Length: 167
Image (cartoon, rainbow, N blue to C red; front, top):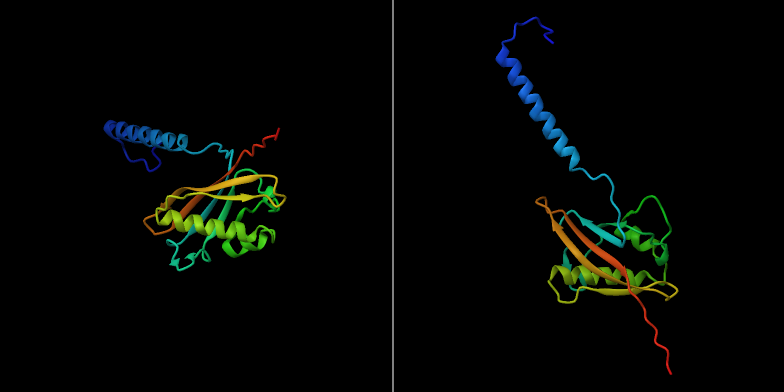
């Protein structure tokens, strides 16, 4: 289509066609690399900070971090099911049931502190408010971006509790 009525040379049409085909191919390749669907069979929390957390004498300072709940329902821990699953650290602590607050907050804090210092212990165990289920928390990934934004991924895996009968 020649809107301006400028004569085109046959070589220009060929180059234009070639460029359009390459551009189309790049778009298709990019779009096929996009996530179509994603599922998380386990629960996970992701802590996000604008810079790596400061280390204090009592552990890391997570007050400026946000926390995202990913995966299966967190109702088993007393968290109400909501569409918004991203909270500031303070809001996350407020949403916790009173009997779980110390276990979760201190456990996550201890895990992050240990992971940032390459501690050999990378797990913390929490139980539900009823005490009928136990979960192991462990740091699975720490990402620091060029901008110094940091993400810390903590998986929450249900432990199998075996009871043995006494004879």
